[in-house]
Length: 112
Image (cartoon, rainbow, N blue to C red; front, side, top):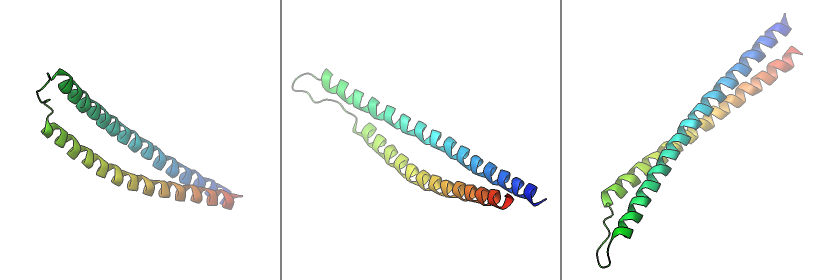
């Protein structure tokens, strides 16, 4: 019957939208973990610099590793690029989920 076909189409479209959204949520969690790791590394670098400056006697120069700082900046820039790409991917995922939701709405309307 047409109503059952509409119900099946509605159910399939809703399932597709939910799958896309769940995948997006997992990807956001991965991004948040990466951001947390970068924050941890930034705090570690800051703490090391503070400690080096505090332990330095008057007249001496604090030993702050330029190479560690340069490595951190390089990694931070790479993460920034990854986040830009991930933002675009998640935007495309949102568009696909919205299309599935619109399809579900259409299927529900056709079933009535």
